[in-house]
Length: 278
Image 1 (cartoon, helix red, strand yellow):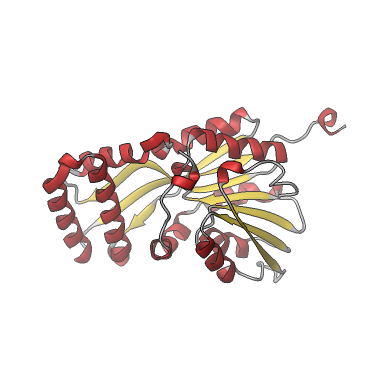
Image 2 (cartoon, helix red, strand yellow; image 1 turned 90 degrees about the horizontal axis):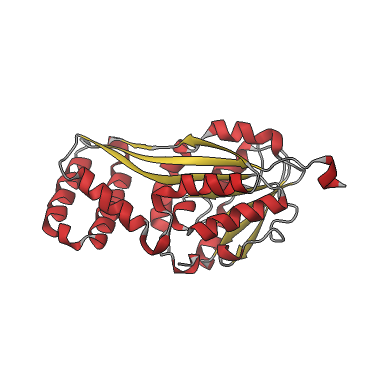
């Protein structure tokens, strides 16, 4: 399955999740990354940028002039992202924006020539192993770090619990692996791929923690989560519909707490040896 076949994310969904994404991303990995950033200017490629939430989170946390190259196959999302990107770094330095429309399966080291960093958010789990390896290979050849945030890991916690929680989770995870996608195996697949290409890999938990104040996001997540489970296992049918109604009512009443587990990944390329640089 190519990335061109992955369903498009709606801007409304991306907007709704942005606050939870920002709260979840790992500042620890960002601090580990800082010493390995090359510039100025920093040249940052944001893969599958969507509406640009990764850039809005990261750019103001970095110093010095920055060039952000936003990649997505959806021209409308690219336009939205470019317009809403910050224009100043944390020290007031200028941020410049460029866009690149295309299929991420064609990413190569030449695309990343001169790059300081590759970023992505909620991307790895909707790729195939071959596409993940392609990103790792391109980063390795370009000697470019990668900060890849918010990959699902197949675990959710709903409080209070319901007897159907585990069955819905299992069906959803199977749906995420449809067509050979890595789905909840993204962290294992990506960690192995980057390590195979010589990078040092670190991961860090980045869960959504959704309480009463996140009722709109929780409700939309529930609809998508249960809907994907039923798409994979239609026999869940009426039981899943009743489950969804119960859960939506609890979310609306502020009586449901949901933890959706994700992990962030930082891959630092092996430094060049003197022999390799000669």
